[in-house]
Image (tube, rainbow, N blue to C red):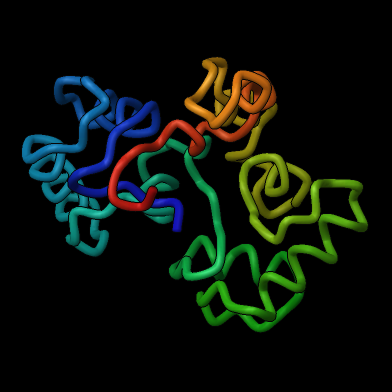
Length: 168
């Protein structure tokens, strides 16, 4: 799931740290965890030290929102309502199928993941998913890959490709 927590590293961590006002070294360590928990408590979010779609949305880090199987919460409910399916806040098989169908209908990459590129085409997300947010959601750096050709292909892809840590 596209979330950040203790032990992770990369450009998304750096953006979170900048927003939290802690040293932006790209390493999600104890200081980032403490600052995130304080932010979550102060803003009525679940205080779990995990930055996911609802935390990113609350913080104005819409470029980091990436909804995929396993995601839960209000942002998932908003997506489900926009798709016209039962809005239970659980990104399960029905949501994946609805997102893929939506992506196919709108000539998008039909991968079943709802990131800024997909969300920007939905009226429900038009306020936060601006063209600038979509551009900010893409990496401008080459990321580690198995071959130089793969790294070149990664430029302009999701910033989430730069994350290193417990999920890779």
